[in-house]
Length: 179
Image 1 (cartoon, rainbow, N blue to C red):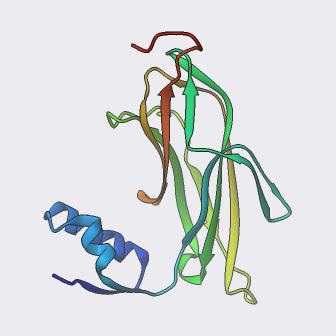
Image 2: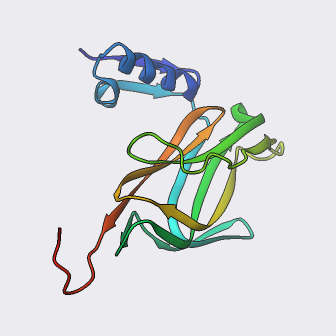
């Protein structure tokens, strides 16, 4: 089955993906193979977990992008990391939006339940076709109680726009016998 979708916005494409998944139509694999035409809208250009990030005059600077944390024992605490995002907004995205970050473990539990959402009000100057906006979120003392697969989900207006995978692995001390 080949699915063709012509959408006026990315929210329509997200709806199609949810419907395909809900109706067991192959979900994302079906949509990946589909011919999809999207009228340009908001686009996540960069979503990265890193040691450090900063926005210097509109330039997003990242140091030490990673997707794996190795620890010798649990519970473990990662001292410091950043989430760096660069999002392109177009005129169709103007208005108020709510962005949230959520760290999810492999059981679906949130590890950042108290993190406040970021309120956005997107306005493009008349002479611009799009606006690049950088976001840097810094985390200190991120705690992990067990090894596993995690994901940092970035949502905009309650729709996931990016998912950053993270694996936390047990690395026994040198000379220790693996259990």
